[in-house]
Length: 406
Image 1 (tube, one colour):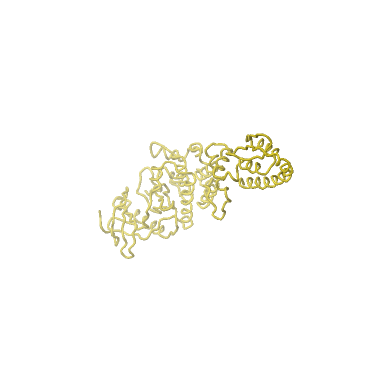
Image 2 (image 1 turned 45 degrees about the vertical axis):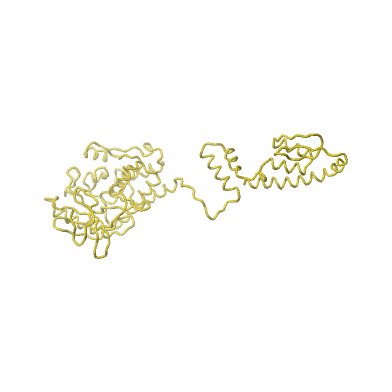
């Protein structure tokens, strides 16, 4: 491994590609860690001069871009037959690796990734720069799901099956637009098509255009209409099918005309997806309300009835206030025997009586105690007042019960 490239001190090797090596390096002038992408110009042979000129032109153009979703390019240079670009060092993972390791991602996350890429592309297009090679391996996912588009404006090595008349590769076969396949002039709508292919792949786990070789893929790109993503992944909303179809339109005029419009539709669709409920810290539920609400949600989620959820919600409440047995206790102390009988029928609680006597409670059951003869008349006179008191107290008590259920 080399130790120096221009003024940059090589720290380690990050990876290798067909054209060169990517290094982690340090810029001693400002003590900043950077990524250095190298391209061996000796491999270009007959096209070396044209390839080198295009490389520098596109690298300088990409260096003008400053957007949160685009990797920042700091410097471009040459050391012998090795051209290099110094760019922002990203601590994250290629989207391609995430897709390979994790399979299908949640729909909301897929839409978020695609929308961020579209936002970055829109900025580049507004500065007259077309990426020409939008694909998962050129998208980095960094902290908190933030997206960075890499390899802006870097021409690819000649690829015999996918080259223009000038020998410049304008994309990777599976992600190329129909106009790229035919070698026609391209604009920002080619990037939109490529992002549509990437979106389709994230949603379904497969490419919309497949084949055993490059020519078969090209034929599919020009002629095949892929199945709607929802037919392969039922979780995909119908609205997304329309978005993908518009991005993958064969004719450029039928596609999204700007990546910004593409991003707007993706965000709008993402907003329609169910979001996890978050507690509102400004609202403090009343006593018993939080437990009741949680039990109802838990009951519905687990397939139990709402009545079961209600029972669960009452399990933590004091029986002294909220149980029917407590109501009967109060009635036994204050109401007449007729009122107690009526309440017992309502609450379906059995009572026992040993003759007309004063009602008392024993272990949540109503029992009677005999009266002495001298107490009978005074007890009868008190019945009317006791009944009124019972009605008032029961009204208050039932009000408390109803309130606790709200």
